[in-house]
Length: 184
Image (cartoon, rainbow, N blue to C red; front, top):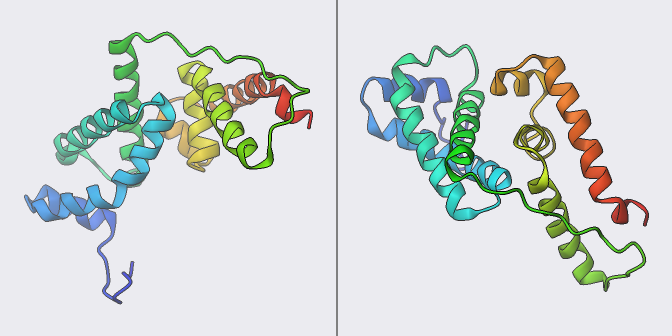
């Protein structure tokens, strides 16, 4: 991997090895490399920036504690995503929040063009938040993070067929909730 200055950047695996050997700068490099993506994913899962920050903090702390046992069978990205998924699940159990209710869209209402895109994004995010945690996880991992079905199965610790069926159901529920946008 090469940086903008032409310097060769160490791979994630090399950074993990160096971090295991006690090099704090190596772990900080991993954090700098992966934290923005982890934060975006956590915010998509929970809908709150403050909660997302807490989840990412716990994820990185868990990764640090788990360095000695990381065997490299999966990529560092997949490993960190798996930790994030588990931390998100623990956060959900602790908070016991009620799921957001999505107000049905008025199909006949035309929004002014500049605000329509913003309103649509808000409605889509609210619809994603209204899904069950299992369905929300697969939508975010596939549609926002772009993970393959196999990567999702490994990250979530479920068979590929389970990922496929959850994704099918999640997409169908989103389609039901966003009918007003799909009729345009």
